[in-house]
Image 1: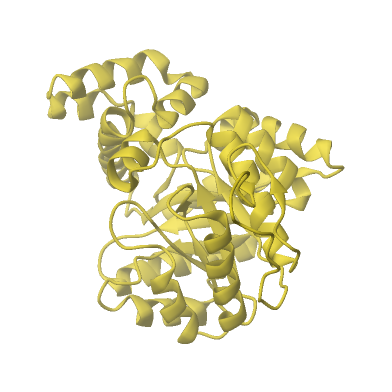
Image 2: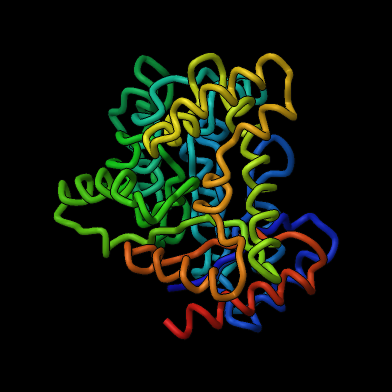
Length: 341
């Protein structure tokens, strides 16, 4: 089991933190992309200042760039990093795509499929002819022509950040890895079964994918401290449940419902909509804060990590906070636990 860490490269001291993380054995650094800094530029700077650390996007929003441009950017980073780049992609949601990018949010699964197909074609150096439904290339009835990419062919590992069953199956079928928010090892099959079924379509198994579980990482001093930290992370899910969606579309809420928290999620969403934010936070089940993260004593953390390993998770993506030195201490504890496994 490998350890990665989520970093905002533009934060003061982030590059030095990445260098120190590399030195203690962290395998990958991932950069987010929401509605602020892009996920690619900062990774180029980190890659230039490190030697073995893999760098990945978590996750580039599909539709914000053409698939061909995304492939060009990925290949640029792959060439300049000496093969250390990992392309994490995700469809985001209608609130961001239509409000921030001005791009209609429609057919997310097909958009993911065609983007992967085009990125792979460009990565192989093939002439770009793609008879897609979302991205037909060249455009029909246009002056466009099929173009052979002016790049050195190289494999770019593609990871998909997704929660819905159809996109999970597509991940198993086509991707190199999965970025699995809200993953609960005790109910792993809710997410892993669709991936397994998709992998079988192309003669693969789960072992052919890097299964990445993002987890907030906080090492508590005792069990009371662990409960307090878990409660804080549960409270944070109120925003995810109440604001990370549009109308009836909230992929996180759908995932929480499949995990068995449907009534509680509906209540949190109702309170949030009524602007009763403190009540919404208090209504989030504590289990959502503790079961989807690593927030406990060293012994509790080791126990949880064992559960992730048993169900096949291959990379734990730590989301750390606080001063850089404290983050490194927490990462060192996690690394020691994974090495003992």
